[in-house]
Image (cartoon, rainbow, N blue to C red; front, side, top):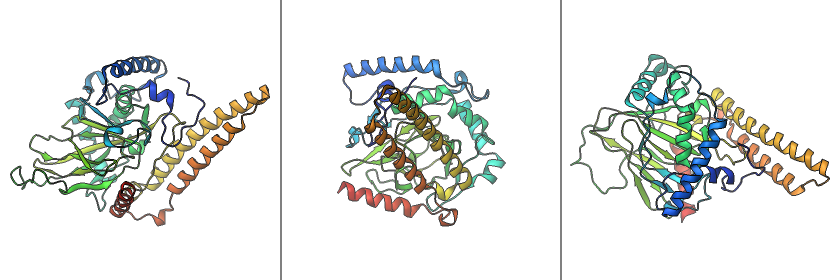
Length: 381
């Protein structure tokens, strides 16, 4: 599928992809819009099938391991009081939806709870006591295959409203593990209290989109919603997923926090981060909240690798255009300057994110989140 020769800036998604991959259900939406979305999606899926990448392995079988059912609603950025151009897609967050079968969840759990992952890829910070990162594919082959499989990517992209791929291998299957306070129950929980203790404080994600998968039994769990701060400063809650279910959210552009859950034995969530596949869509990725809990050699190496691959694709495309225009005797100066400005902004942003190792405070994230939250509140005010 050929991408247009344009460079997308200022929050406007690639127009070709934005119209090609539209969400199946956007709430609210008139019937006519729903029909046009279905037609656009059918065209995209037919085209994508011709250019799809092969599966990365044979462990993950979508016929056995996917249990996808469309989310009941997909809320837009405008629903939350933001302009649709705020992020890389007009989609904000989905309702929880079934994604993987119980068999798939059991295999994933066996991989993340292995001795090698627990000993070699465990991190902690001042906002989370136990996190697992960077273990796939070496110690998480099934997890790696599951999130890289074309059918899984098609599902996530369909919901997000833009063609997505995992940001990098290092961010596949990030795990948050917590033990809910079983001493509290429904009678002890204040029903309308908005400032309940949270698992992670107010923050924005480092990457454009995330897919959050629940890997624990939530039958006896109370709470665990995601609170979103809208464009007006109001708080909107989205219910958390149950085991095998997931939520897709444009977390880089929405301030949010995971509210604490009570009851149950454990709460394990898997977070895989995504970015637009097209190198022509701007990338607002930051590494502020992941640097303190990462192997910096792996994180920096993979981040720079994909950014340079995207830059290479843009440069090759622009070089062809310039050569063609010179042959025609009509060099487009405006297009050249737009291209150069985009590259300067993109690579300067990347340079800012590659911080020297001795300046990174390992495990310190809370102040970063707090500073960003305060800045966001000032913008709303």
